Amino acid sequence: MEELSPNLITHLIEKRLTELQKLLDSKKKSYEKSPQGRIRISQNGGHPEFYLITERGSLRGKYLPHSKETLARQLAQKDYDARLIKQLQKEISALQNYLKQTDNGRAIPELYENLCPARRDLITPATLTNEEYAAHWQEISWTGRPFAPDAPYICTAHGERVRSKSEVIIADTLFRYNIPYRYEFPITLKRINPDDIRGNFGSSITLYPDFLCLNTRTRTEFFWEHFGLMDSNEYSNNAAGKLRLYTENGILAGRNLIITMETQTEPPSIKSLEKLIEEFLL
Image (tube, rainbow, N blue to C red; front, side, top):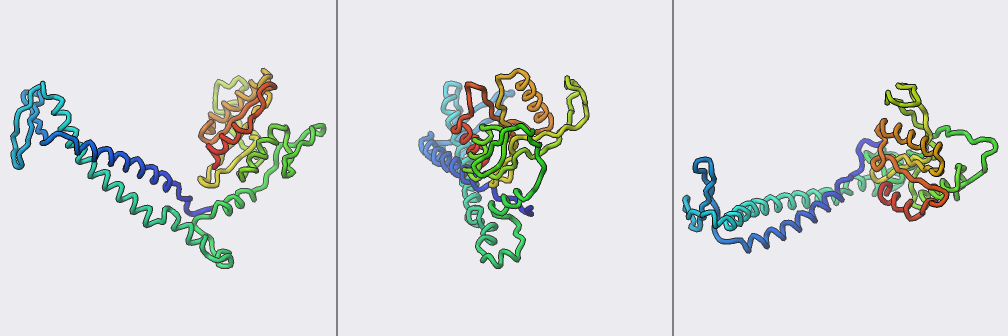
C-alpha cells in the first residue's frame, strides 16, 4: 500500500540525542577535573612503560613508576575523553541537522497532508496517513470460522459477533483505543516439526487467531490469541500445541504475537489488556 514506510527513527534519534548530550556534559565536567599533562606509552621488553608529558613540544616526558598507576589511568582516560567529546559533538550536530532538515521527520508526510482534499484525491502519496493506511488494511474481506447453530449470540459494543465474553472485553478495548483489527482472520501454518505427536509432518493447517491487530504507527501486524479455559487439561494441551506451531512458523510472543489467558478464578484484567495495547499496538 505504500512506496515508503513511515518514519520510525525520529523518536530514536531524539532519545539518542538525550543520551549523547547527557554523556557530553558529564565528560566535559570530568575532563576539567583531570590532572595536568598527557601520557606517553612505550614498550620495553614487551611490557608497557608510562611517561608523563607536561611541557608543550616534549616527546619523552617523566617516567611514571608502578606506584603512579592511578595517575596513568587518569591521564589515559583524559586522552580518551578528549577524543570522545569531539566525536560526541560531531554526532550531536549531525543528528540535530537531520531533525532540522526533515522537520523532525514530518517533512515528507506533510507534503501530502497539507494539501487540500481535492488535490489529495488526485494524488497517490509515497506514505499514507495512519488513518488511510488503517482504512485500506480493513478493506480486506475474509471468511472466518463458522459458528455452531447452538452457539450463544455474543456481540461486541459495535455489533460484531464473537465467541466469548472475554473476547468482547478484548474487542471493545481495542475499539476504544482505535486499534484496527480483524476477528478470526485465517492463517495457514506448516507442520515443520518431525517430532510432532500429531504427525502430518510437512502438511499445512489453517488456524483462526482470535484477533489480527495493526499498529498503524509502525505498520506492524500482531496476532492476538486469548486462551480462556486454561483450567482444562485438554484445552491447555491444545493451546500449547498451537503456540508451538506459531513459534515454528516465526510468530513469536513479544514480537508479533500477543497472548492472554484466563481461568475460572482469574478472568482477563482490563488494565493488563490496556498495558499490552500500549506496549505493542500504539
